[in-house]
Image 1 (spheres, helix red, strand yellow):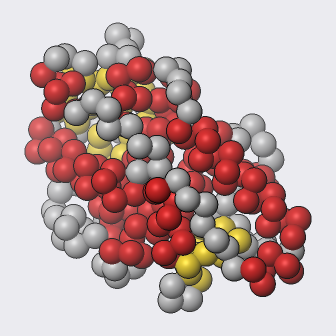
Image 2 (tube, one colour; image 1 turned 90 degrees about the vertical axis):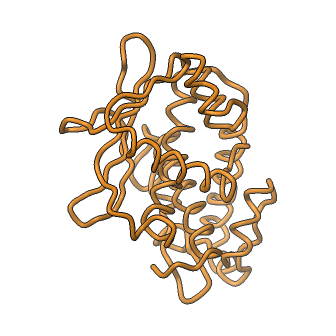
Length: 229
């Protein structure tokens, strides 16, 4: 994917919606879980779901950041109204869940993974980051027991990928959140991460340059495509 700012924004949002759908509806059948899996369609469009896709142009997808529901292409809705309505309702439900008030571990996990997925898109496709030689794995932990919530890693193909749970190898760096509430506030931008670190609500371990690199990328991503601020 070329470095096109609108395209990267739209793709990051689309991938975030897909990941949110996978996590929120993880107990559903694969058919429903992959209902909103995005794919690039032509020069200026993204489709959601391989079967009877819901199609938007980039600009309409970016509207989601401002809590505006995007306007899909009418032709495909008319062709498959039931599938289209199902996807529209699912998108609306995801948007409400992402923005709801909650201090639960599950909600922190959801916001963290959505944020990591969007950041991975920027790391992979923005010229600000994809020419960097920075690499490695960052594990995200929660609480005194240091529960492994998720991680982001640069794979053998040079692409950054976000994953739930514990990294299979030894991470190069760790970011520990003192509580789910703190993690949620940071994800939503209500608490500055540097302030949280200075107050001991977030602890950094391991390779600091990697954490600084990721922190800068996540901040750029947040201000461009956050779906829950």
